Length: 311
Picture 1: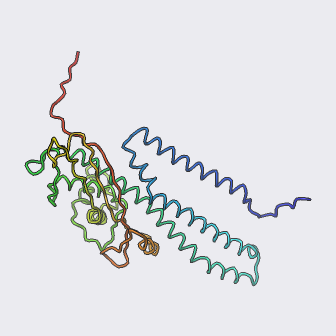
Picture 2: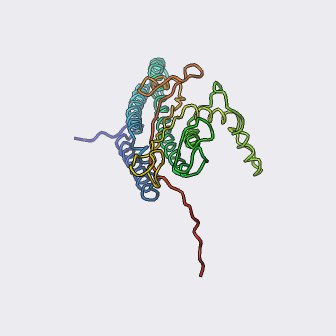
Picture 3: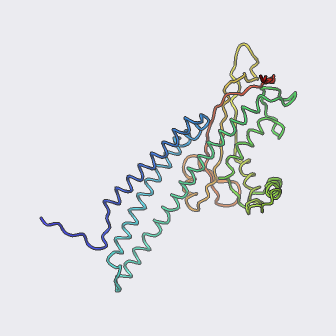
């Protein structure tokens, strides 16, 4: 049988599909290579591997695939519906407009859901990195001597800025500030942070960035108010005090952060899922609780100074 020649303007679907498939495989391969390289080069980078392989990240990836496929199908339907009318003028323009109006809300909703899913994946990475920062701060802070209240290898919660636990929480809050909320409904704690950032840039003769204002203070306030940490107590041994951590003992830190859902409409839908909450400020503001953990060995404390000997 004779082959029918391809009509002018007909899309080359098969080659494009193969190109898209190859590009997707290359992207997955690149991500896997980055994860493996990070583990081989720096074992501390394991937090990233745990983040990308966590249940939430895999769920978000599956949702992006499903939403992207639905978006492509609707876009294809809309394209095919308007195909007879392209390049023509006549009575079919109204039919194409009606079909466009009917499909557009679904495309818009899918776009909002994909945007919020992507931001949720980024937020999950930040929370896992926050757990690593908190654990890293804990293993270098616990061995320090804070006086009679918190001597070496002892951690207590005094509920104020003088405790080691407060330093650990501050490190966790700083890590989630990029995905924090700067709503005007949040009262900033003070102007110390934006003033310090502005002074830092001013000393170098650089104009302070536009974000070094009250928004930065509100982000810090939200991060501190919506981040909770817990440090596992020392392992009980028969030969030492139960309250003190041993030298090089593993310190397990858990971070729980309420991630701000910033995409309108989609935030309300995501808040209906497990972990979703309605925030206490403003109206119609939602978040979702993300939990991450990290374990690092206690660094201990060096009581001596190495004297270098030169020949």
